[in-house]
Each structure stands twice: as C-alpha cells, then as structure tokens.
Length: 169
Ligand SMILES: [Mg+2]
Image (cartoon, rainbow, N blue to C red; front, side, top):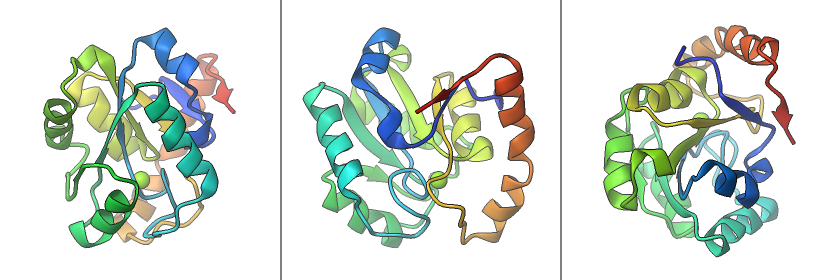
C-alpha cells in the first residue's frame, strides 16, 4: 500500500549517509514545512544546517519540493542554497518529475523526504520511489487542509509498526 511508510525517522537529522549508501540512494527530494524547519518558519537550526552539509559531503544531491507558496519556500531554499519547486500539489507526482530531471538520477537512486502521509508518502508511492517519512518537526500545522489530513495519519503509522517497522532515531 502506498500510504504505509517504508521507513520512519524521528527527524531529518536521523537520516544517515550510511543508510542512504546501503539503499543506493544518491539524491533526496526535501519537503520544507515540518521537515527542514517548523511549519511556515524561516528558522534554520544548527543541527539541520550541519545535516545538509553532511549530506553534501557524502555526495548526496538535494532539492526542494513543497506544496507551499513561492513566497514561503524561496527565502528558505535560497538560504540553504537549494533549487526548489513550490505549489507542487503533492500527492501528484509532478514536482517529483521536475526534481528528478534536476537531480539527473534514476528513480531507483532517489527518495522523497517529508512529514505528511497524504502528500509526501503518497506522492513518492505514486511516482514509484521510496519515502523516508519523518515525524513532523513541530505539532503545529497552519493550513486547515493539513490539520484535517493529520487525523488520518495515525492509522498508517500504526500499520508500519505492526509490520515490524522501527523508528530510526
Ligand atoms: Mg511538510
């Protein structure tokens, strides 16, 4: 099922270069809100900055695909020096197609990183790439549409654990 996570990480910083190497993942498509920072936030935490640097040093290509507006995404993306797609309409996989061309990798070499089952996990599933699912960075979501979708996420997360999935810390 394309909604049950394949992997769950506590935070983006828990994604380690060794894990990616083991899975043959050379490129990551990153969500922004509640993935790299809080919802609607421009704060760049030191730990996230260090993680981005670590990924670059490990030779991992990075790009941003967000459902939020250019006004919100652009300042953050420019600050961390990444190309970006805004208004991506995840779970539609259009933004991932753009990202793959930008990254210049095969589908088997890339993964989506994000915190929403009905956006990030589903887009990855529809596009046919793995999702490195994250627990949301903060408990706050501004968009009402996101708040509604959150109510239906625990079911899929429970299924992950029932199938023997572990939380990557
Ligand atoms: Mg998000």
